[in-house]
Length: 464
Image (cartoon, rainbow, N blue to C red; front, side, top):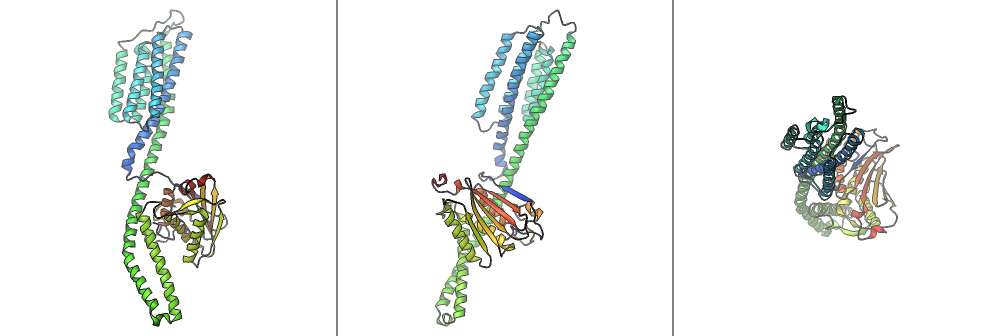
């Protein structure tokens, strides 16, 4: 159901220009509340963060191979290569298993992130045990895992990680394999230790900046997604309340409209009234208007009570638009509408009641400001149906362009105004489309409705 309003071009005078606003719409299913959508969004974000931890682990594997080769070959410090290679192989196997696990899961909880970070701490502890324990300057890498955990985990999980890291460091102070420094070339072992600390510090700083920045970006995307879901849920609730109100009003109007129809029919058969030509003409116009009211009420009940496809009928793009233009011209004879069909080869589609009401709404609002000239253009852009409604009115005010598609955005100041484009957008959203509004360079404005033909086409006609 679409309530007819005239708020699409509700502007103050003198707002033409080249500014434009595009109102994208989503094809997400309706969400009852933002709280219900929070858990899936969080799990999806954790999945992205797990992918970052896997990338960090690959970085650690490469860094360990380079460091071991440098220490063994360049510095000549003997290392237990077999044992350290086994730890690196275990990290590689863990990473491959993690990749498979992440690929097969839509979402990941905080427990998965905690386990991954704990395994990284265990691997670092094993490598440090084999290369000097707490005397190894790369013990500062424990802080990298703790910092990432502080960003990714909840309070209980991060303290578990801190406890593991502290216990590992304490164990390394008493249990480790000492490094055997060569007697030649190392007159000042402390300088070598300081150089190692510097390299460890640089690694910590660079990796933290890179990965924490990317994690924060994931978190911002999650917050934006949750905000969009809450906004969508609020709009859906608003539409449901308006639909209930409209359907209730339509039911209440049904009885008096039927009574008026019976009375008018009786009057038409009365000899005294039928003999008066002027009065008969007035009665005919009254019956036409009454039938129009009954048709609107029927459309309201149909849209409020039936899913898309029920009550709809097969048609083609040309037939659907031609019938729509003909009906609109009949019911609004004072307005001048020009129709240009540049769609090309015709295509079977579903004649959807809600879609027709949405286009009617845009045409009604254009007629409000440009009764003498309105143009409806139908075009095909690849696999999309594009409908453009152009007028010669004053155009959109800048503040209206900034808030198009929001309910009650109108400068008329009348109760209930500002719902026209809001309802149009929600109909288009259900069809997976996009609404664009802009001011023309010379005069007037254009509202552009784009629909995927896949949501309208019947059978395999789209492929043709």
